[in-house]
Length: 513
Image (cartoon, rainbow, N blue to C red; front, side, top):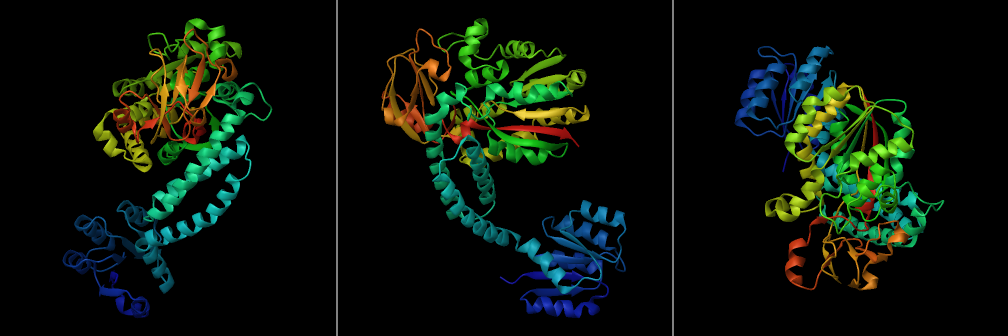
């Protein structure tokens, strides 16, 4: 279909060569010599783009722009002017112009702005496809090599980058190819964890930085020098951080963005307690048994996070004024946002925000939320929508106002599961779909990663003889009522096992702009 252009300029006759140039490129160009006619023609005809001179007799270009936008808000309007006055530029930008050109303009400038506004999607799609096809081969070669823990962090960042890039284009075929490559990456990453995890957490020299080491190695040195707000967003994946990043960057500048390794199980009870204690779970049980609630005990498994943080600060010799704040609902978040000024003198403010974890659980339990977050892209979109309207965004603004450094991290990620794996256990076996702990567990050894508690530095109780972890996109299902639970949990987001999405998590340091 031919692109239709409206060009309004009181010196339109002097632009004949430009118009002939555009018509030679296949565009249809209608012309008027004043703003009022431009407004009327916009009402009666459908143009793809409008070029509008700022200085015309009668109503000004800015007035015409405002009226055109009232009638058709989505039409791209390019302002052309001889003036370089700042207030004209600001007003034009405020009225959501598509571009701003200073006279004299040449035909190629006009052609560029047309392509930028009308052909951008197609051109971006073509370029993105070509770039990913080139990167695909490189990623494939890397996946066939023996990557170490640090190289896997780089690999996952690249996969997330391409996932977000390909999400913006219409080529479903390319996204399917990436999904296949990501699946292969998860298979290889699972092998890496199975082969190395026990040695790594025993202190192997090649071990990556794990979650329980992060406060001591990265956060504590900063806290000793400047005020910090530590924001732990439960269950935040690296791709979810990427979609929240542009909003947070309105107040903050990213000083450091990296990936760290969560621990097994990638579940809140284990990972977040380990983070706050600065210890692996078995060490928490040995040193501070009163602060650990076991799998076979009643009550919240994370109710001693503040106490565990206090023990770590004491061990590190950090004697400061600090606060711990856990947000589990909207009202609690709103209350903290309103009272955050009372915490501005603290050297450290810890905020645990539970919404993303609740979102993943709600998606499992609510048919409506399942439909709203049907796939990875929709899940990210729902996370972004929540954040834009949540008290957390207001809390972050308050952190910026207090001139405090912001550190964002999480305890684990989550993975969308689709492949059921049968397992049998005693009645006392825990209910998590991605890991099991108990006695006399029956399963296919080829389908899981199993470990003795002492080998993976996890608590050993009277009920537990081993831990079993699901891999990639698997989830555990008991043979009883098998079909019902397979259907119920298929395509839900779960955590506790081994996957790139669960283990490789964001750690971000931000400075106030």
